Amino acid sequence: MSGIAIIGGTGLTSLPGLSISGETLVSTPFGDTSAALIKGRLDNQEIMFLARHGAEHTIPPHRVNYRANIWALKEAGADYMIAVNAVGGINPSLQPGQLVIPDQIIDYTYAREMTFFDDEGSPVTHVDFTEPYCHELRNRLIDAADKNGIGLAAGGTYGATQGPRLETTAEIRRMAQDGCDIVGMTGMPEAVLARELECCYASISVIANLAAGLGEGEITMAEIEKYIAAGMGEVRSLLKTVISQI
Ligand code: HPA
Image (cartoon, rainbow, N blue to C red; front, top):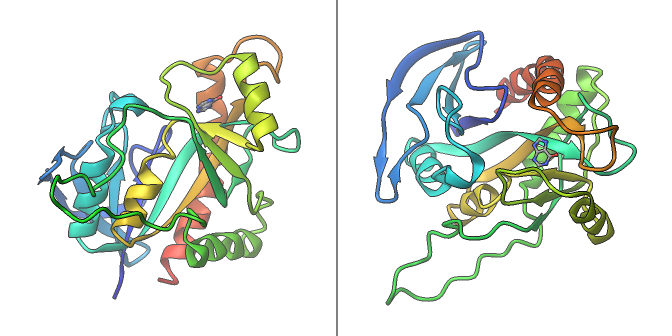
């Protein structure tokens, strides 16, 4: 049986309904994971759960040890990884509270540890990243949305920014011209690290706000938290449906 892991982002530091069988603090060759790796059963299915920003939501996106997190999950047997990411909406068709299963990425991050193939003396390795997300898992999520009557966006380009600040209006204008539909701070290097370890990785992105300059006035944390909370019910339905199939 293939292991499945959920990487929880903002608004998902725990999974209600998960009956926990073990919690392990993991040290990896790349350092410690963001939080204890939780193993348990959700609707009678074995899963793993990791809170990307720490159990208390204290680790900002640029400080997440993405390599340790992905390494530890793979070591623990996770071949499938579903990431939950809070994002801003750039494409005008997307509204706060809505879900997106992105199919492409543009990476604007910098100064992050973004590869496992970093050893001097090892052969140079270039993984294929033409399709950055796992086709099979994306399809399962999209089918699950159909089954649950959830009207999500079944594709879109995720622009990954460095953070922790939000973007300027001009940056979002540029990202829109580049073809980004959504903007978030945690999509990379998580996706490529999963690819390097040959995991099947996909994202459920939750629109928390209209991106900078597209809504009225400033973007507040209160607004972000409100809309993420609004989208979490649908996130949980998708997770349950997909987990029951793998
Ligand atoms: N920009 C970047 N990351 C985000 C946003 C945003 O507008 N909203 C939630 N995460």
